[in-house]
Image 1 (spheres, rainbow, N blue to C red):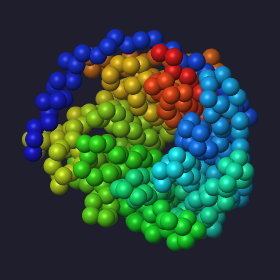
Image 2: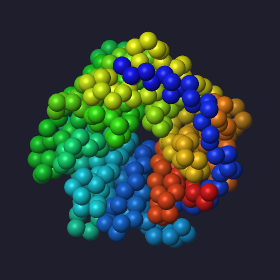
Image 3: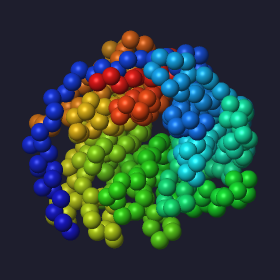
Length: 402
């Protein structure tokens, strides 16, 4: 194994640009939502502008990008009342290269019911109409109980899967019992036909969120899942999903609610719906047969660094270079008032000495953050932030004017 530990030792010596005071301007997209469970970003109507998609309590909607930073984002209903229970998640990505996103939705949100699939969980593919401002055809797919998170993954040319992660396994009570069955659904030529499925794993419990890993330095596409036991990484190799080496369990024994890739590290909210934001630096290995992310044989993982413990119901996480520092920053959102009676989102900036500085993004409009996305909405090369607020019942854009 190549010795990668030296990169960690060099980390405090990196010269970073001095952090700026963040300058984000808020635009209210919608202040009359019901819950705002999940957000996705993508071009819905093919006008080459990224739109905002939202899985709200009963409606699945999209907001049309007006093409400027002050115009109204028109709201269109894609689907309504898919199940008697709430919607819970949404995934959007252009899979066929036509410049328009394909959309899937998770519904049937009933986390207390872990046995009856007619009362808990649902997965739908939304088949687009000729006019995307009209309602879309909802195609029901097989599902597990407690459908919770989904994302599209690109596994190769013309090969995409919808990855669906439930919260609980069947008959699971209090995070004990059967493991969560995580599935990859192959996107077929005819969405109304069969969707071949691949069982990714069934050993984790209370899997809260995950990230698709498609970095250029990785030998295989992968996903990293956060749950009750920590994290697990699964790589797509030889036309099947494989759990990687146990060394890829970066937060073993600690509950992980949200997990995101940060440069060549990982950021996580801990425990599930927790108060802590933590970070761990990792390195990759060039050996295609090696575990996905690994230190050299004689080293151990760097212990996770606690960045803050001031969250309350931490529920949203994104990473990116928002401040033009040539190094990622971490943005975290929480949905319940903390000890200071605050809700909102904060940006954490890495310093050369290994510390992290906390900065307010913009608190001028209250945001009890349920979900958070980062995307360049206006094509200026800067990442903007998009947030949905549960208790505040709003969708906000934080325009990046740094």
